[in-house]
Length: 282
Image (cartoon, one colour):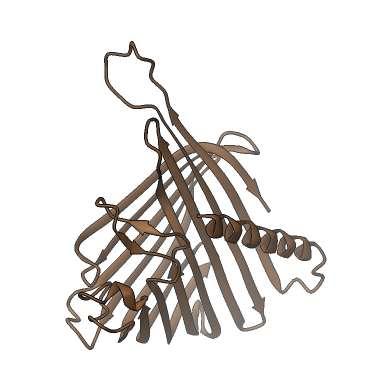
């Protein structure tokens, strides 16, 4: 837990330093912007409350940072996402992890014609802290699992708020610590191994829109099919982030993520986080 908090502090310092460098950038080749959010949720009941319920408190910290490059016919778009959350229920000595995500997306493109670019994309995602199942068994930790995707393709980019990347030759690597595969497969990695290589096709889409004043919705979708094993089973990762600004610093945020990956679990995984808190743009 302490290592995770230190990681967040370190990453935050790097991002703030990068934001300060942006002010000194006179070449105008880079466009950098980000958002820090700290959300709180709290429920409290006294002993006379007859409706039932347990007092609890929760907090979520998030970073969403874009740093994009453009010069002549070349574009290079990068997005860094960090999210971490904890909750504490009254009477329980343990804290529970409610969110934990570390992700980097990068797409390099060279203009082909119109809104089309020849492209190469890279994706990395993992988590920072130890994860437990309902039986308090350790099922994940930092860099285990860790996912990497890399591949050439074609990028259709209408604007910074709307783009789709097609990669028909994508390499995917899954890493886990070997103690997770001692007694069976884990996250698609076979028993006794600590990595799994896949080769397939990927589609990544991004769409951000403002539905009304001070309300924005950011959508990200990634589809992947493994040519080497059951290509009909398409991995799906959809993320939506809604920001409803109250004023310059306060907002309500809704984060939704839906995952289907039959290597991990043959069911749809859904996560939703809602809260009111502090937002800071840089």
